[in-house]
Amino acid sequence: MFYHDGGKLQYPVRVEKPSPLFAKALQQGIGGIQGEVRVCLQYLFQAWGARGPAKYRDMLLETGTEEIAHIEMLATAVALNLEGAPLEQDEAAKDPFVHAALGGMNIQHVIGTCMAAMPVDSEGVPFNCSHVYASGNIAADMLANATAESTGRMLAIQLWKMTDDPGMKDMLSYMIARDTMHQEQWMTAWEELGGRKNHPIPNSFPQDQENQEYNYAFMSFGLGDDYKAPQGPWTQGESFDGRAQYSSVTMRPLGEKPKLGPAPSAAPAQEAQLPSQQSTR
Image (tube, one colour):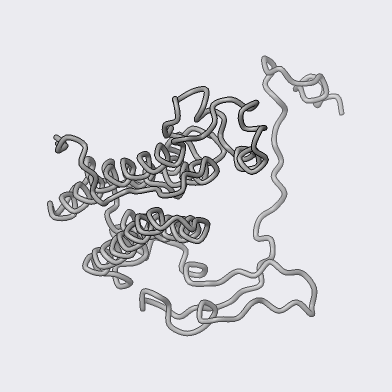
């Protein structure tokens, strides 16, 4: 169950110099793959399917709900940046500066929403949930969440750099700070779950059942006697989980070329692919 308090914002949103072009950029923070709709749904679906200690489910619910508030803030910012924008191209053409600004405007803000935000990215592509990750493995999800907050913070910083509006900078500064905290909390939860000692994920599968020759081997696919594989702590020394020593191998084919049989007689294949033709060759 979710509640609202009549539409009060989590943090003040003000726009001193409306910019339709910046409104378009802000859409990435709503419906982009780095945006708030993505993390909101990711955290909530992780929570709704969470099994195990209840505190992780509760934390996910709290932060998923906060992301709803961030969508609300950004949607408000989009609407405020669109206020005062000319509704007709002829009107815009009278002022070359306004016309130049509208050159990058999302026209759907004019013809589709009466100057309001949409669940789309900065190019107008609708959000489709393809980047919502809820695996059911709490450790894997914590790492996915930290990655999501990292790219979200990158986006918020770029938006902060794009604007000289004091109100927008203030709002984005707040959102950048929240991204910092969210990165920290997900990694802290991952560490509490065992961190590197509980790798590889999932740690419930017995490692003696996996191929022991290649489970800690870095594979190089370069050709030529003079090619040298990239060296680093991932090619030698103790593994991340402390369970083995890394090695580096030059990969060569271990299998043969696959040989497939003819296409089924009922398949929409060419005659040369069918059994009757291949048997005569």
